[in-house]
Length: 256
Image (cartoon, rainbow, N blue to C red; front, side, top):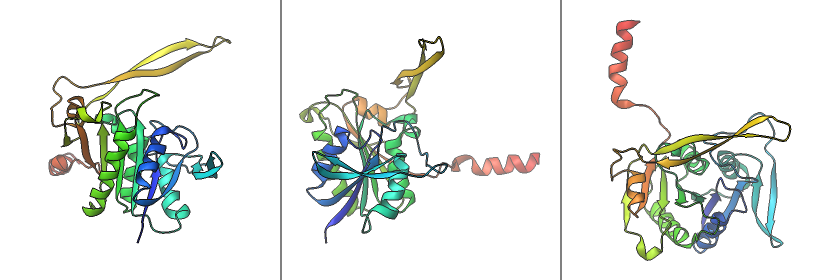
């Protein structure tokens, strides 16, 4: 029986990374694209509840491409699995994102949140990103690795876990290996570009670069990626700090 994959992203349904992913994964599975109508970078795990979720059939060169959703990546996974896929989905793959998703930035990522939403719904999932913002980036190596990861996940089920993968933007022959890495503390060091419009209204553009803390270890996602390795990080939606749970109970009991 043919496998069925749901593909999504946060760069929008016509993004080159998503097309590369579709072309590669279609070699092994029936792939359905359900992706945002427009770019949804850094929307995190937002979902749409205050307005209707608009869905249209998108076409490319006259052929059906997939469903464009006027919503977030998490919306796309919810409605894709719940309504648009005619049969159960075996795997959700989100990407290929333009730019790495590592460290604290994972919390902001629509790409990763789409995979996390699939995990919440009990469907195996993968988020994959390429470490570059170059408009002319070559996604082929990342797409080939996504195909390998898809086969790996189907053979090694990880219930309610999403795998976050980051691929260095270097020639495939220069990739130094694959590392299973923990999420680090790299984060966007924000700056605001202050501007004035023609009517003298002040507005700001958020800018900045992702920076590694001085103590960032080599076993983190950002550290291993910087060394030229593909990184794989298991992601879970339970944010509880179990290591302080008992101590917090004791302190609260003493105070209240």
